[in-house]
Image (cartoon, each protein chain N blue to C red):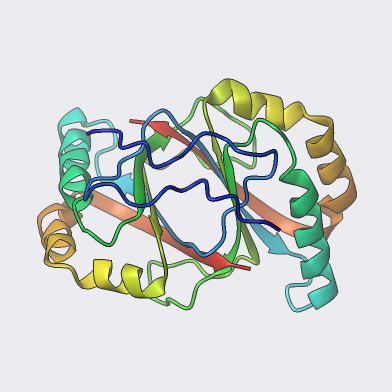
Length: 119
Length: 119
């Protein structure tokens, strides 16, 4: 997966972003220790990243940090930034997204989504 | 809070980011309907955004989306991107962060943190 340099160098001590729709998904795999299932989900997300209304995406796994407020029980984090709600709505019904759900949803037992917009 | 334009315009249909440490915090206020408490937390996060190792931050609230996999029960979302774990570790012990916890933690009843790094 290529790095397109969406995040420009830091410009100021205050790098607050506005006008974003943040869609953060956490996946819990049915078989969290099965490397094949894990790689399959990543392959699905790789394909999913092609939806054109996505502004930025990041495929993650739990970091090494470990404090009592940290939930590190998930398998994969999928962070998407959109310009606005309309672009996120388009993503939800994009054929690539529908195909992703159809082909890969059998891999996970739980998914939590947090959608956030500017305060 | 100013917009510093950290997110460059979309360059390609695949905008995957790499080399990120993603720190996403969700706050549940003790008094979620108290506008004063809500604004106080935002004021605290505004001050917190000055920590210099932060690459990008976003202060959010639940979006209008509503499906069964979406958790929209939190009050405030606080998304931070760091260059790496070291920068996040510095943030945790930065005097500005310690002061934030000291001055504002009485406002929330629950906090969940998801830290993610590249797969």
